[in-house]
Length: 348
Image 1 (cartoon, rainbow, N blue to C red):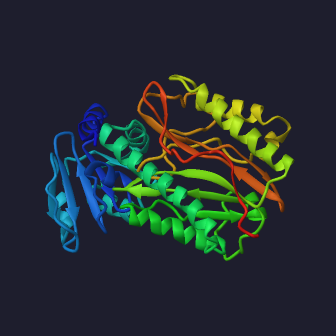
Image 2 (cartoon, one colour; image 1 turned 45 degrees about the horizontal axis):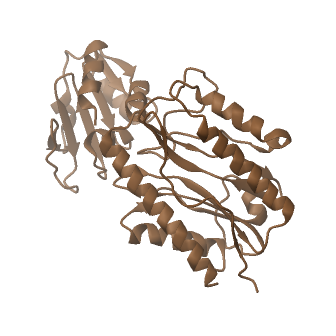
């Protein structure tokens, strides 16, 4: 993915070598592989992929593959190297020390921002994989509703295990630990799924499948029992806030503006919205683009990101609605499971 663009950047910045080492996700970005351990060395005109004997040996376009064995340091040592590009967000102190010993005259240059920028604009292959992950997620959620009607699922943990099993059955993997939050547990945005029994009230489901390393993220609400008029009103308010923000997405708009509008839509309940409106998604569940207050973070074509407003009432309940979106000049919602509030009277 975009190896040549990165090499052009190295050339322009006069960086002699970019050194990426496990667990840097950018190794997967450039190779589309996720070995148990690897190093990727990139110069302005070539790239070398070092793996252990325990991993399969791939044939990659424009990247040579080599076995990583004893003495690898001598293989890459070069006194002519003066500037080394590193991802300071993932490079460990151990490897910083190794690089300083191998290249005592070289300066370490952070390339994390250019890598984020490259990954924030998806290419067709990535869009296809994320779309597939989103379909797996949506289909599994639809089957969850059917399974809940059978009354076989008794706890949050049952709900989580069912969804994650469905992801795998459909050819995907689990992007992140599924959040199944019943009642007051949903008032904790990052609730850890427990053995809490299902009961009357809102059930929050935050889940996502991955497909060939690319992730989906979706949150839906289910009501177990019959919601009151006020509970329906809270859900309608949140859904309207989410849908109104999605409807105004255009190229060049700062993500900050979307966040501001979403909070304005929630009116007196805006203080109950305690996290950002969304995040980029791809190889990582949270990646660029960022919904930070910086107005320079703007919507661009070929970005994929989430929109997830939420309102939380401690020790009572919480609501969140989240979709993964693709923007190509127009918005496409990739997580297609219905957002109509489903009420299941399963306790009769």
